[in-house]
Length: 148
Length: 284
Image (cartoon, rainbow over all chains, first blue to last red):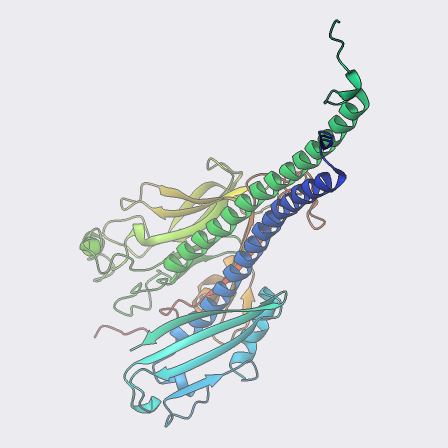
């Protein structure tokens, strides 16, 4: 007795698996388009954050060397000083940042490059950080300048 | 005995099976093509938007670089009668600045040496260091003419103002898209040199602030040199358009038929030129 050959063609299970594979490929392709769109939006936010940081840096660059830490109310005996959105000088920058990039916060760090007290330093590192949220992720852009 | 094939045992598909297979294949092809079309459109839009962001950053870099030296050495001897201003025109949609842009180059004394010796012993800014930014329609056409007064005519400088005309510009932005132009005067005062910076702009706005951060005016053109001299910060607002329209999307905030299907991107930058407001040092 010879065994019975299975009928030619695909079974329902095989067709289902093939369609599932095809569907996952299509969904992946659609995901790529969404990913590209997300990247473009991220670029837009980053461009805005950069102009915010530049605006702050522009204003600080017009200050004298000593004003760089005096105006921020820093303790000149310390080697560094960080001020956030609650500071009276940073406050207007914070308002400006929020008007240009939703949820953005501005922080400024002034540090003596040699690690000595700010008052004794010849070189200051000024960092302006702009932080914002993109969906569940938090993003930060930092712009640095050396004051000599 | 002749061979008679048993048709019931043959492999292959019947007509109904063929029809079902073709129908499934057609559905798959239609879904794939629609996905492909959507992906292609998203890709093209992404390229457009990325390019828009890039050109606006280029424009803001260029504006920052030029406007930062406004006022540099415009009055080298502190002569209070000198008509030269750091900001010659402070308009809502146009700005013209003066500054010693070639002070550190081999061109520093050309043509400044020949401009000195008339009404002023020292002249450190030539005509080609009077720089402006304004929009015009693509190709450099437009119905408006910018007019301002500056001491540009005579060699050497006589201290008297001449009227400078910059023709074919757009001072009101009601028919976008526009091209951003940088212009400067020729060294021999024979005209204006225009250079296109970026295309596809919807608008360009300048706002001016004094030292206390108070907005002076949207357009300080008619307020005279005293108000222009009090400017310490310049806000530049650029709004660009994607190169191609997106017919499936309409901007609810834009009623202009030529741009309502274009995506927009705004970039705002504050520039604090360090030489504005520096005290004059009178040459004894």
